[in-house]
Image 1 (spheres, rainbow over the protein chains, first blue to last red):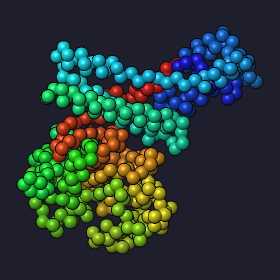
Image 2: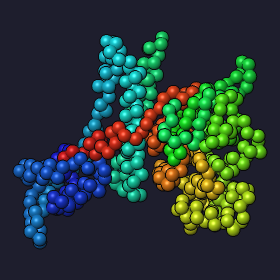
Image 3: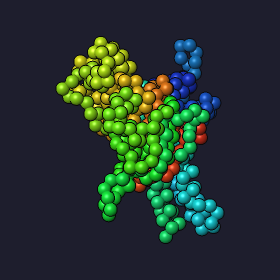
Image 4: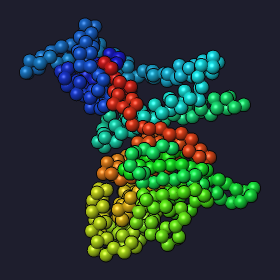
Length: 169
Length: 249
């Protein structure tokens, strides 16, 4: 996770590490399960060191982290960024090409196995979405996962068609 | 396709075929299909429009007759049943859910659900009792007196599902059940199917939408009238959503 994410999640109000974690959990739902508590504190320590957040203590003497003016600026800059994760499908494409060229395996068989796996992931994401209460933040995120999987499955269909044709010209 | 349980499957088809037209115009809508659906299974049949999946569903539910092949529901061979028996089977043993709901707009939700029970010869009191119970089960106890046009799409489909269940069918068949619904209503219907499946209902859904299909336990792909691929959806990467798509700090 980029440090800007942690920063931005602190923008609402200064928070303890556990409050920050709870906010991330609410936004991520089951997708936050792999997140590691220790890493959050490592991130906070790093942000403090670079002067983007400052530490204080609340009434119960717990550590509370808040944005410094530099931190706020960084968040503002991050919000206007239009970067986007690149879809990582070139590797799979090359797997099919290599398998066919070297006659190592049937590309259609590889596509089928991949399709089965993505369908299982789709089922899991779909079920996780069903389990979210209406209007949950994590539900919207899961919707995104479901839609991306559907797009990948459509591409696999195109792969299957194309490699089947090449097999039987 | 393989049997999916050690018990006798609820539905069995062997060499099932459905032709339309003759000679040059012959269309084989369902082509030599072997299929077994286990008791309590949730099965999805997925394929592009025109692949024959709706026709197959109609054959399974006795809405249409096969040109050739054998079909059993539980212990009973049904491919050659006379129309009278087939009508009875459709009423008592199979529940249908359609994309377009097919509710009667002049009847209240409650009356729509009661109707098949009355047609099956149950007393009005019994029909009423069952309909009330089922509407509560699909979360529409408060809408019983509404006419379908006053309900949302998701609510209408839930009434249709209650209606499909009123005669306690062995099998529920759904044809694009979420095809007319937005994504929130789709979730409502999928959640309901999930509950019913957990309660032991046997469910076969046909759809072109892999997202809907992926909620089943087993998915069969259909092309040009034939079953071409089968995916068991349980297992695999199960339980790793966070690792696969999540955030690692």
